[in-house]
Image (tube, rainbow, N blue to C red; front, side):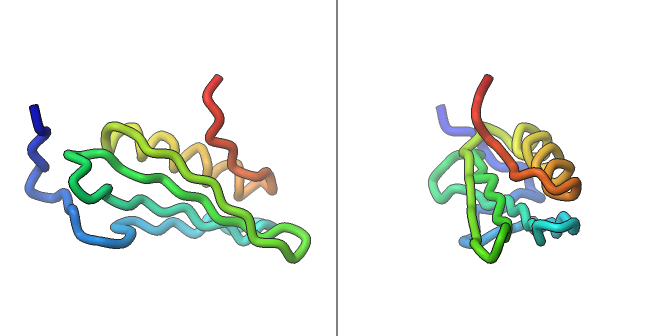
Length: 88
């Protein structure tokens, strides 16, 4: 059964949240609605370390999960640690 979006949610292309983490890695975390994803969200983190840009991403089932993952990634990036979306 498809999940209906709340009125504030979007299915538009591109990130609907961008967080600049600050810190030594110049980290950025974005949240993007997945087209036809019925509420699924892509969380992506990008950082620059030793002149090399790296990125990781993770698809999650809800905005609440995306917020949790994003806040954790921002905290890691702000303290100089690369965001890691690996599951335990």
